[in-house]
Length: 182
Image (cartoon, rainbow, N blue to C red; front, side, top):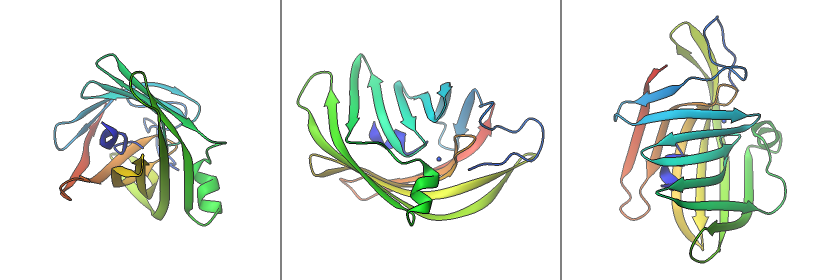
């Protein structure tokens, strides 16, 4: 479930009409694996989306806030303010957040999220140009790696063009590449 959060995860500048930006988001994103991501709502820097029965909220494409699947909800209770992408870049490209992961049932456990900016590039998509940031993100719960991945993310549009996640148990890497936006 957490690995899906890497699909989204945060500076785009649309070049032409019809491009997605802070004032308009796509309805869906389809990836080469067939994964369909539904954009549900955007409230400032928080995106709510659904994929494979999992509904998630993500702040700035970096920080998970909560997710729900099958009536089971898990909330992240972060200690202190979470830096936005610009603050992470200004601080040298690395940030760490600590807090607790609280499932609706079960025990609350400590959680740590670490992000590192690997670089920036322009992405041409149809008639639009987006400024994208490559981000490495690792999330640990109770000391165990839950997710470890790299995403190529256009933060202003909140679009992940590519994500690669490593299965913490097997070490296999799964890469998703954006195929279509609607």
